Length: 195
Image (cartoon, rainbow, N blue to C red; front, side, top):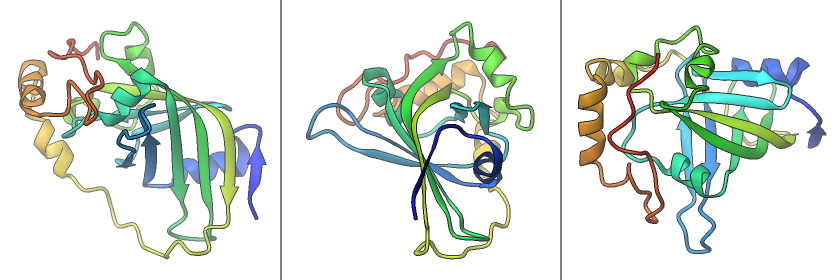
């Protein structure tokens, strides 16, 4: 059944990097706060940085719950499911940080994602996760589903935005600058992109 891993390498790394979809879960510290679970996709937007550190590109969306929760407490869990091939579920429990566009590390981190054009998706931040617990489980109940391709809708929608129009878009959204629970989210206006 389930196994704990010391690091993300070998078959575990291969499995994680080959999945077209994963999920990110965060929550505020408040007991009555809103738990957030977000699907993440787009080929090339996830990277294993080293044996205990992973990262993904945080693109434009209608809320900024993950960023807000990470700014408050840093707790995050990432999960991958095998929808094809042998059943498997992998979870990385850890500490996350939203590296925002004005952070000196931002451009260097974005360079770790050479297979995606971040300018097409309204890139807001790079989410960096340091693993504290890495586990897998059987995944016997996860259905078999076929991956066809990434949708192009997100790229088509946000490719037409520049920094000013993206900031204006976010300013109109109720839960970008603050989370559903009133926590600080993305700073607005967005700092100019350094990439």
